[in-house]
Image (cartoon, rainbow, N blue to C red; front, top):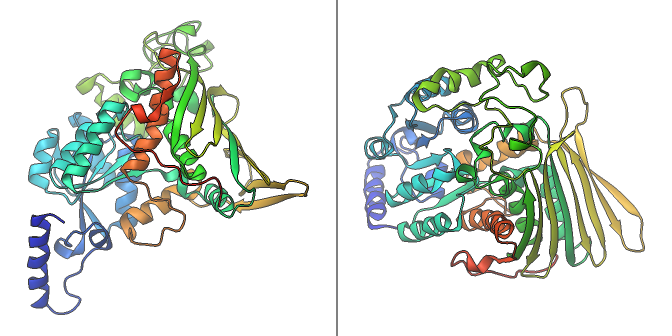
Length: 456
């Protein structure tokens, strides 16, 4: 604990001794993060980045669900119009800042939430840590190995904590896979086949937004696949060691039959399967088109724009320290959304085919197939959790804002090392595609790789 934190705690203890019992409360997040509870026991939050993720999951939804425990003391964005709308949408009674440094200085938050464009995460994470503030960052932690190392160095120096929000770990069926693997149901894990499919609606959306540029999102191997690589690291219970990958752009961008700047005003709208009318979503209109004059950002960009430079199909081979081998792929123009996964072990196989539910489908559970060598197959049914990402969003936020000290038997809470290891697989894959050579994870940062086991 820092000298200032020690002094604050002594001051608090002296003050609490002179107050009636229960009249001054310490917030559970404050206890978990070793902070003193602020006025009225509420944790002071600041948020930078008021796009769709910042305003909904980490803005309005946090205030609605945990308003008795937390309060926003500052919102920051470089776009003043979007910032003003975000404050109203979130329902936050706090100042807004286009100058991030000014927000840190004046708002004095206990915790900073970072939901900006991926390529700028490192800037705000590091500034927050250097200011003596704990940080919660949306995934991915950052977009290249150099920024990653800078974040790790800053956290070590500051003594503060960085939490990366991997909501996928918290969904019930992914937790069940973790439990079955740890219980040794298929013996020693030897290999994994993992194939993710983004459909022509969700997948295409990445090519409309800033994610279409490698410099902003690090390619989908970093932005999107960080979820999947984190799951693999968590399930396999070991560090990735070496990566080799292929990737190309063959469907979107320059490969399109025609193009325009945006879907709005596009002369090809009537015969384009990817035409998308943003004006039908009031929230998105208020966030983006109404504020384009401030930053020139078009949320409904053409998926066939010639500046698209990320891959739309990817295949990755990963070798882990415990000798588990992984075959992974990501396709961004599938007719359906979901993934297939299979874990191969010395005593059997675990597999699942998880498809995202459509509004008209009445599917309230996922299935996991467990097959033992020389035995029969068993179907394990896992009910869907409520809320986004199969229930993962709610469980994640409960851990962050309601009771961070709650038991974590399945190791679902993720810190900076988890955030780093997930993006390093994607970064290594991108580097491998560009170089045509395998990439060793140990060559990217100073993290010492660990081998932890091959099963339960």
